Length: 390
Ligand SMILES: [Zn+2]
Image 1 (tube, rainbow, N blue to C red):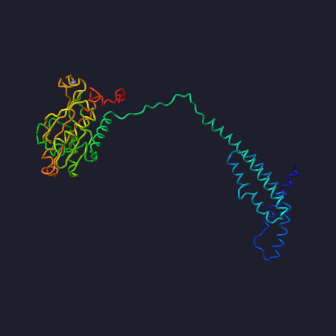
Image 2 (cartoon, rainbow, N blue to C red):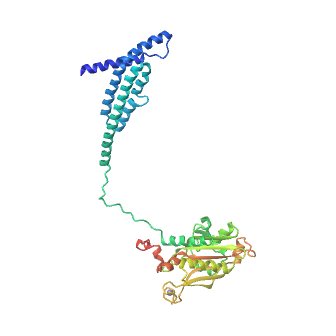
């Protein structure tokens, strides 16, 4: 054994020695020839030994590889294009045809052997690493799962989406949100909408005033959005605007100091009350279903003339009269009317050329009527037993 390893060491010395004594530039042609003769003699003599040495060393390194990365390094070292085996094959050209055959086939043989050993070792190491991974990443399928209840869209948001979709189908588009701020000036919320100063209609819409700035309020209605829209864009207009509004009111089953409205506006030449009736009847038909009769009742709003309240037949008693409808058989769902002459004038639209209609509907009320909900506070209590029903 000791004798053998000594021999290997010697061969190594000689082999690396003769490779280094192969300079690229020779002074004379004779120098080159003489050198080549010596070189080829040595090459012939040691080629076989070198190949056997490679096989021995590579086999050891393959067996000693502890993981796939180490094994890959061994593969590159011996079998790649720049590997040791290939550099021997490159030197074959200096040998006779006979020697090329024997050494060449030996080299191929060794390369095949090494490839087989590497692929066997590769599978072995892969299995070991896979097992290690499987043990480390074991999943216990008997553990109870981490249950997270899925959220739902709030019924009011569902109603808003539904109504917006209906009006989009009728050719309306949603107003840009910057035209519909919740913190509004008294000027836009009342004055521009033709509320005369100190008019009792203002009392019906008592809202929250701020101390920080005079005349800045929480809007009592979404109608201010009409004004901002008309100040910024000229007719033809066909827009809707959903949003929150506020009233200074004591909270009860029927009233809350925060609720939602959807404002609608259509302005063009030749818009008549018949257009208003057509659009709103179509809306009620789609929203409540065609079996619900509607009626238009004369009413008063400062910013529309003529004005109307739209009622649908009571969902609770089917028109017979009950507590919900105060015995009338009808439920008020929205207010509407032709845009007032003064309002058009206020926003710089010529009322002699243009006309239009506007409407506002309470989202809470429409949701309560559709689903027969009897208390508005349920929308704001965040009780999941209620909310999960939608
Ligand atoms: Zn009723």
